[in-house]
Length: 407
Image 1 (cartoon, helix red, strand yellow):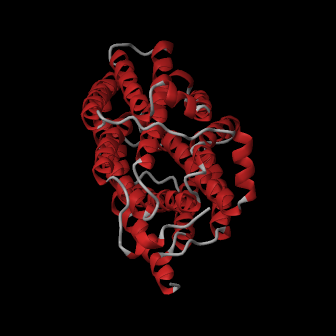
Image 2 (tube, one colour):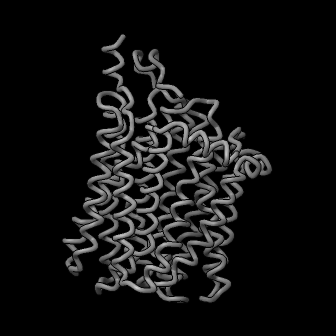
Image 3 (tube, helix red, strand yellow):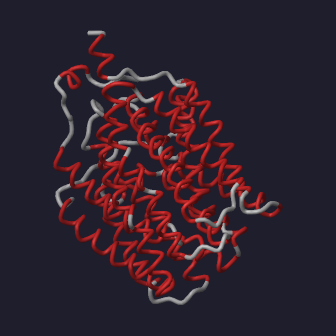
């Protein structure tokens, strides 16, 4: 385990291939918009087939496949010629599937293809993250990750606004057509920007070995727990908040505006937080504050059923202030704890998302069989509460100013 390079900090270095990171961030912006264009409305597509209380079965299948794919990520990337070629292959596959979906009527075949599309997009994100990781170093992890996430989330920001209006006017065929255009543009730009890349990942997953390392190093265990709680929060909110808002009588137009406001903290806060964590404070204090904000906002969702759009704009905005902070600080803290020999830990750390999504879907299904829709937000609050304990248990990383004082 290690900390950032003293030399890099003193020189104010930003040790990475800046040109390639800019390219990857541009791709993330396009990818983020395309994914968010259908992600925030797709749970209602599944609900047409089985009802809101059974939607979790679809996500259980999707993220079960994603989890297995991550366990064999090393082999998959090498089989496809490296992470760059794997990313291109997955985006091309997503383009083809969304093209077919734009022509299909609703049915079990279209539902199966939507599930496959979601699997491919999730694995493609991991491949893109591997490319980013392999062209950067860890001297200023907070600001590198913060800048990348800020650009990526700028792509997410307006997608719900456009997708909900598209859904109102053209139904889901319009959503899939827009997704096809997005993936087509993303593939074309990727071919140009990544044409010289190969990026073979050396990350090899050995689950038992990686889990033993996590348990043996308390900071790694706690940051994985925090990552799990964030991803659990995300999946519950992604699946059930649109359906809950619809149950309150809100139109898709209104929900699109709410989600655009909701995503603003990801664009406004992540780079400044990463920079402050690097330079002055470390990650722990901000993580505790962010976890607390997300927890309180999620608890508030349980107790309020106001149909007021202004009320929900404020509440969802505050929930994402917490989530945005957790996201960037989680990444910064984790990558400061490991070195180049910990590829198995990096691969295992990426399983937090599919693991949380699988468990979230599994727990929500029986819960909704007996309790109303708000009960899933109680579940998310409980998981965030345990994540807050893990934030308190972390050892803080020294900031640049603290390291300079100790020289």
